Image 1: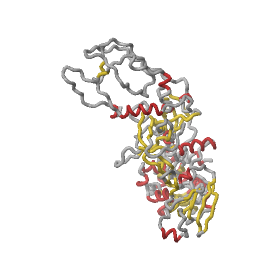
Image 2: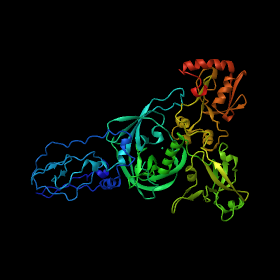
Image 3: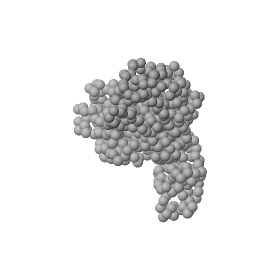
Image 4: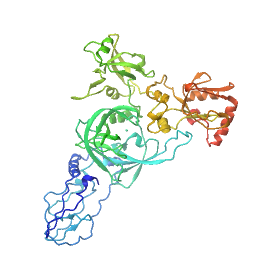
Length: 584
């Protein structure tokens, strides 16, 4: 129980000859529970029902204690004018005790506080159907148990030791549960448990949206009350925290390395809360908890995935049968707030927009848009010089929000200013092709081994495995530059590196080569790892020559290198010199 639920630490001393009155806890949580009870009342026809998972799993109410209360001297029992609010944690009301005679005994609570007995006529007992209707939305929250087996990037031919985690999820109908992507990433087994149940149900993962992680409500406004429900650390039962919406803007989603609409709230979001719903004061889900800000100068800053992002994910899966992702415009742009810059670009006084700096070569926009074009509007909505568009009354938001509302493959009307002339294009939107991908989508990492040299593809999980969570500071500068600024020139381009060198007689002098990019092989630029494998395996020249970054050169005799490879594999118990995905 948190600090709001505890009574005062010191004992109150009464006057001599009189029994002390029981302290009345004035807890904000009690008030919140009272309000929460009424706000979550909903018709029984709500789609958020535990019946979507299992209908025969309702827990039986716990019997009331039958031990007799010790007799004490004192005054006669009094009626309590205002009874305590109904608790949402109880599965069923305890049966009311029989009426007692005046001057009967009083029960002493274990913590020393006095509990005054109330005659049966003073408080009308609740019926079972009343209790069930109190929290229908909270009953849709489930605990998610997942066993993960992560890939081992240091030894890519095997996986790491499995581990277990728990998080929160939410029933959305159709026997489907929504949770965050990182809650089930690299899953081996997923199980669900309903509130109040002792049974765990096996689950199947249908789709994972790595960019983002019910009746859904609309997007809340600033200062709207929100209640986060889930199963965080600190206990096994369901937990409820409350706060208000403190900010609405485009946020960087850590797990997906992308930027989408997000809510900032001041309710506590701890480990295990991830995937749990956030309700508004009407009992409708307005988002899903997914991350918090851990900083020495920040307190109680949590983030919620809002309903527009959630609905996009669900509708995307229902439309195509798989998750296709959030599209992008495929450009890098510059603000046009400087008046001299606007004049030099031929903009009139009433024209506003942003300047295109670079265009993704793999994006469809590369066929019609050009660098230094001024993007004036997107789908008929004017873009300001700072890159924002009107959002709601008194609010503005980055125009990437408009792009994220689209689906992959849809078209958008873009108006640009080029050489003082206005042009309009209907552009087909696509997902982002990163040179260094943010995810490997649950697949084992690709690798290739020759003469002890382990060649791998760089990805964000690879960098995180090699350099820790602070890889953006600790990784080599050239890899970081590629990660942050480089663009893929073709859809199949990859960044191939020598991950490590398994020491053997044939590679003497090359032992210190670690995480250096392979630029070319025998004078031919390396497009991707499969291209490198093909060139090495089909090489009939006398030497294998690998041109590495920083102008390093590795030379091996072809016949000797290929002959030594099998001995090195046997020494290190490696089943194959090439990963399964590269064999075909």
